[in-house]
Image (cartoon, rainbow, N blue to C red; front, top):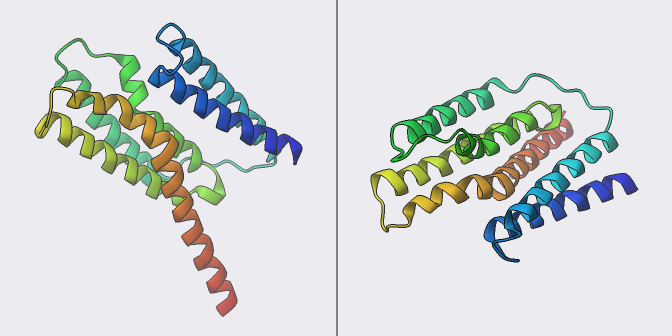
Amino acid sequence: MIIRNMALAAIAIGVVLFVLGVYGVIGPDFSVLLAGIGILTLLFGIAFLLRALRPFHLSAPHPYVLGVAVAAAVLHAYEHVYRNSGDPSFGFLVWSMVPYFLCLTLSAFAGTRAPAIAGAAMALVFDLWGHYSVFINPKSSTAALVLLFIPLWSTIIVVPVVTFIAWSITRRRRSSQNDAS
């Protein structure tokens, strides 16, 4: 129980440090370092959480989540290769796929296998909205900044919240079906 709580605290601290680093709250000299420390703290927290929740039975990612991730990869590859005014950046392409890596990971666990579909679908909807607001109907000269922040907000807000809501609905349905039996 203590390891689980420490792991959850490390995940929360990692997310906060990463966001503070991305937004340069402490200053531009330390923002990359702070974001890096945040990512490492987050990864250690996830590793400790997985260790605390052992044993877990992993399976292959859900095919629907994989399909949504492939569709997102095509969208982002199109944006980075054909719609980009400069040279394509592999790092930025990987950054834009982070929410889908999270969804693929969530869909490998039995308890969140189906709810991860909703998280991946909502991340794709969020990305399509970003594509529309940047490439099809830009409202300002800074519209392209949306592409930097959509992966961040999808990873720390959209995917976890939508997956949790879908998991709650699925769990409630199962318990009501078991009660009816």
